[in-house]
Length: 189
Image 1 (cartoon, rainbow, N blue to C red):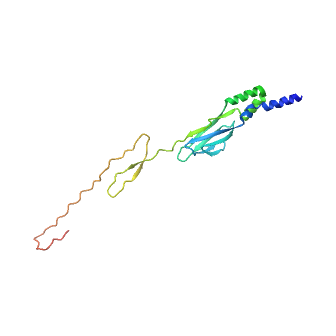
Image 2: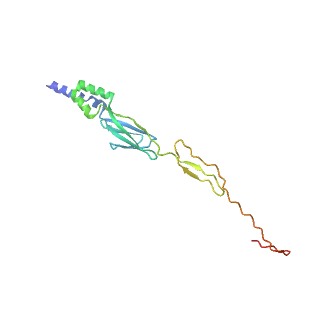
Image 3: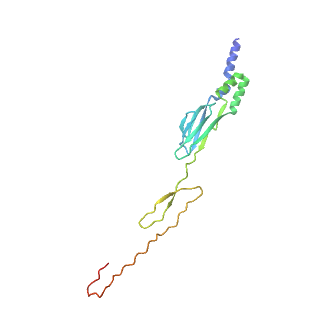
């Protein structure tokens, strides 16, 4: 009887091979390009990239990235049976039997997170504003005007234009109404 109790204790100890060798939690690395993005997971983790979070091996979750000037991005992190996890479960089937396999399945110790590391390249919002410079006119300096940019299209800048002014009026000639006395200048009008 004593021998059965000892063998039962050994079987229970070895029954959760993957749980013992791999543990029930996993570390997931999170990175972004550019770095410094705010990360929030559906499991309520918060960090700034690059960072590493610890999660239960059986938990699937989403990772949301946000950074000023860039579009938000979300990555779904799933679980899958790992190669070493399969070996642990197989060891349980041989040594620990159904109890060991059940413990490994319940704890998720045979699972890994995919992708790990979670890496995202963030996309910039909009496109940079291109500026056109207007030609200078007398007494004014050129001022840049923002032009909308379209992918693959270069905005046209017009040739300098010389402003056309109306012709100046011809000077008026004084009217002579009669002979002038010497030394008298006609009044200007």
